[in-house]
Length: 329
DNA sequence: GAAAATCTCATCGGTTCCCC
DNA sequence: GGGGAACCGATGAGATTTTC
Image (cartoon, chains in turn orange, brown, cyan):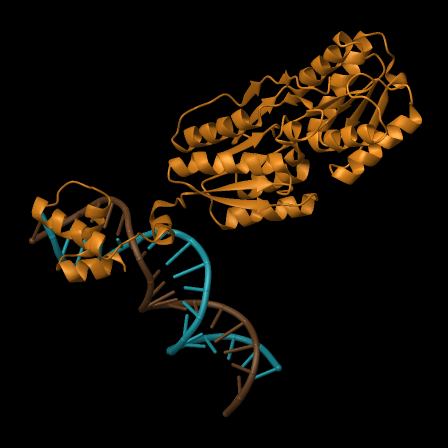
């Protein structure tokens, strides 16, 4: 059912139907009522593709996520999709994969789909290849990056100070009496490097030298988190606390400690990052750095909508993380 | 003369400007 | 108040031109 069909049935032109659909003035009340009744009767719904041809707007935004299997990525997509949906925007969510090639390909897909705006989830999009792709294909639409930033005129970033947050985790460990600490970063992203920097600064403030620090890298899986904790215990049996760059590995690490009858937190304390749902379903419950994923997602959606409506915002907005203490510290 | 390359135009479903 | 027509951009069908 198109406006032409409605127009034919109503005995008016398509332009008259279009005016009624868009609540434009200049239509006799009687005609408006008749057309509205027909729209209702035939359950008319406008063809957004056709609208997009004229308005040069698709009412669709793109959300790029590196790996949608991660719980906190799903959460971010959920909140953004829901928030943008309230403003009448439909979300196209793409799982880009790890490599630059795939991320660039995803940017091209969004450009082909003529999305009105884009949200990039995570600092892993902070690469030269992605920057070039955005500049080439999506320079005319607003792009919001969560937990990262690219220096382009149409890009804005919502960042969380995870460096300071992890530094505070080191301080919490000290207050709780845990001196010998290890840090496990999830991968070599800008965000995880920032967390590592927080660990280094926190430890240096306590008199440790950079080369003395126990820093590891571990993929974000249950198996790898478990194996990583075993390795740390093997390398440093006297370890008193471990800070993981994300929650999933930290939860596995607690399991590895419990399996060895090592008391958490009395003998080894554990802290994660993300403050995800995993924190409450393990025993003891995991202390975690709340990097404010929900607020960051909502803020990204708000800034994107502002940009689409022509309202200005700063290029970068910084949110501050805070520790949520549970039983593992 | 046949095949390939190139060009032209209608089509889709809306919106909006101009005019009666 | 309301109709007609141009227009949006990609696509494909058909017409025309070029090449071998």
